[in-house]
Amino acid sequence: LDAHQAGKAAGLFSLDLDAHYQRRFSLLGDIGPALESADELYLLFQPRVSLATGECLGAEALLRWQHPTLGEVSPNEFIPLIENTPMVKPLTQWVLHHVVQQAAAWHRAGKTLQISVNVSATNLEEEDFALRLLDLMARMGLPSTAIEVELTESAMISQGEVATTQLKALIAAGLRVAIDDFGTGYSSLAYLHEIPAHTVKIDRSFITELGEDARTETLVNSMISMAHDLGYRVVAEGIENDTSYRRLMELGCDEAQGYFIAKPLLPTAFETWLQNRAI
Ligand code: C2E
Ligand code: MG
Ligand code: MG
Ligand code: MG
Image (cartoon, rainbow, N blue to C red; front, side, top):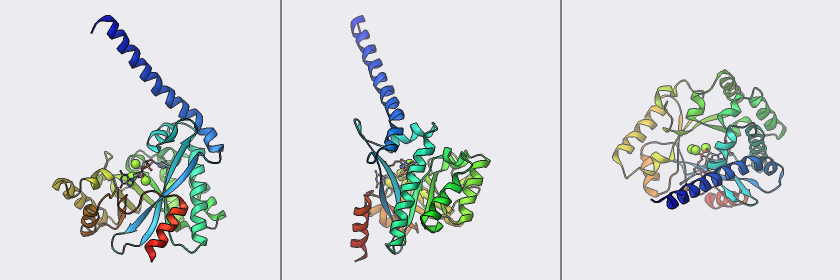
């Protein structure tokens, strides 16, 4: 590498770095306006079905951001950025408001569905988190059992006292709590019995390898039995084919979610999917 080439490489590198920070900076600055805009943020709903009966029991609400200049931005990119800023509070408030509103509309239409909503660890640090969610549900006439709160394993482990109080208040009111991305944290099974929750959602990374890797299958089998023995319901996420669907059925997993069943859908598409499935 001569001096000229090295200089060029360094320049390119810093350009890339600049672009990276520029993008993060934009996303952080633009989330506020997105919350005010009528059409940048929206929710998709991915069905969750019973492996025993095939019946649709509910759906997970997944946030989408159609950014005015950057296009569709994945929640895997913008949620971790915002989670560490005060904007996480109004963002989650936006999500909860829209989820409860949609769930209440389906409830009025006579559909018995349990809608899961993802919540950040930092949200549980808010002293009034449970109170605000319960108030929102009461105002919209939604029974407490119609909402399930999803938190990642690491989020639950790192919790302080405020967070535990919030979770317990939600559970006391009748909401369900799920441990998301189970198996990816450090804690895993050892801490499971200490977490106030009803459901364990086995992470997609394990489900993808079902039927391909015997060791993964052993692991999934133990996760399901252990979770059941501790009284949890088990959901498998990221089911992409018939093989893993059948295998999970045989292993006694309770519920399934994944592209094999349905992709995350707009509310109207979800309703159509539900209707076609019932016939
Ligand atoms: P998650 O909560 O674990 O959600 C499941 C993710 O897996 C979703 O990605 C979903 O679209 C995807 N998925 C479902 N089935 C399949 C499958 O069969 N194959 C594959 N390859 N993927 C599948 P998505 O929607 O991109 O969301 C990513 C993550 O962003 C979520 O992971 C969650 O941690 C976070 N997130 C999404 N919406 C919200 C929100 O409203 N609030 C918060 N705090 N986090 C959210
Ligand atoms: Mg989730
Ligand atoms: Mg997950
Ligand atoms: Mg995740």
